Length: 326
Ligand code: AMP
Ligand code: TRP
Image (cartoon, rainbow, N blue to C red; front, side, top):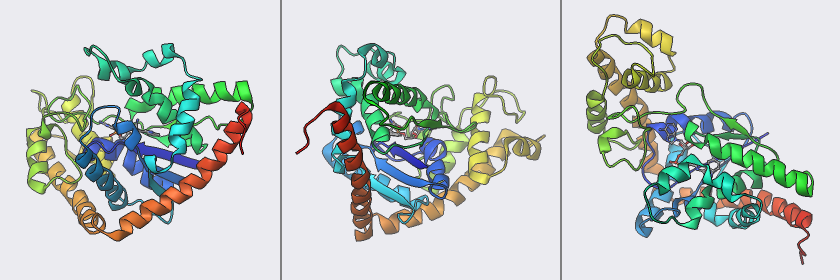
């Protein structure tokens, strides 16, 4: 069994990324062969400042390791360092229909209200399919917002296999019941995102303790006083309970019981502590690894491991398509 996933180097990793994706990356590296990528090719589907992209790419790589990914167990690499991603992406682009890409909600959201959108933004899900299929991954741990892209990946795999013969593994979406969609702290009807202009809408893994405190204490709740998990009626409190559960290992019913009769302030105060206690060792490890030569070595090693698999898949794909390989 093999697991593959990726994160875009478009800003600091926040609690949504951590709970929805990275925490699962760490769990799965012990259970199966693992490849985790920093998807820089995806990030340029929207404008990026080169210096920032460079910095964020290495930040995400260092954060992968700081949260517990172990280069002895998982291949950690940068997408653009394995050129087969772009190559397979083109081949799959020729299998995908404009109609199905038009239905992708992420494309609709990101292009909404714009007069025109880059072709790369439109074909973004095809590149994502190429990432996954290149490694014949069985499992893809991602947040809920990526579920539709995984469905498309499955469709493209089946379509190619039917046309050209069994080549790709049809991957599974690996989401979680709770935590697959962490919401903004200031507006619990929107998902926590790297691009929200309000810095207090999210908590980044590299945030200082004071910023964590401020963000949580200000988090939007409701006018009741009961601490109860109910994402429809009480989205703010439910979001805080989800974060608390992911960070403490306690179940949501356990937390509801623990905070019976308590006010929102008490819950928030404890959550600040739980989050800061978890982030502290992650930040220390990040500071060590980020400027080190070791990080570059890990990324080169990851690239070599990934490339060996990618090249093998591309040989098969080209043979199936009837390409002359010299
Ligand atoms: P991105 O930053 O868009 O590359 O996302 C990296 C990973 O984090 C993907 O698996 C996303 O689905 C996941 N993710 C992003 N935002 C959230 C969120 N608010 N809640 C849960 N998962 C998320
Ligand atoms: N589209 C994903 C996101 O924005 C990132 C991504 C790119 C990805 N390629 C992938 C995730 C392959 C899983 C597998 O979060």
